[in-house]
Image 1 (spheres, rainbow, N blue to C red):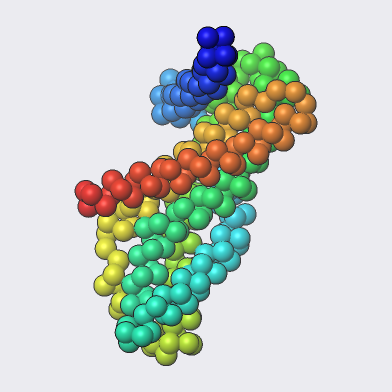
Image 2: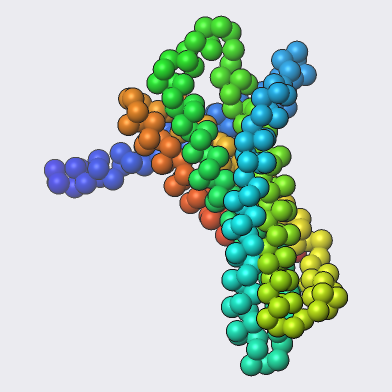
Length: 267
């Protein structure tokens, strides 16, 4: 009986901790939304300069790496698709497969994973370092709410820039497939672009855009939350930074599965 009690206690402790973290994360997200959409109408304006600065960090500074990876993914998809379609003489449908795959799935998801590793980790490290240095307490002493001062600019910047980066990833990835089709498959530009135009419909773009917004919210929320719960010194900051990336990527993939199933059954 004692062994069973120990087993149940060991099993229940992680569940309790998970529920506590889930509640605190929900409270932080609720507060962030309030400071984003409600408090500005009560005389507490948004920090537009900070939003622009964070947008440059998450967006402009990430364009190169997102473009390189998306271009490579477009090439890889085109090569693999051509290899499977060649026996049927259907290489022209490489354009359809690559454009739809990138727009619906790979563009938003790969961009979100890249930004989770690049931006989400930076958010957790910055806020975690501020907490360790007791700068968050100093902000509250000065009458500044940490959510409005730190979280909202990062949250809004991520919501703005991740969909934009996803769009760039889609275009660059399709361009990679276009170059491969032009050089290796001898498909001319008009036929390739015509196939892309026929394959893509509005729901593909909407699907990718909605996913990108949700992924952005996940990355910003998890990164900020992991920064706020840092304990200890540099070791705690490193642990929270790692956790922010791992948890964000897991939730991004889980959300992608859910939204893909939802859009598959409704659109």
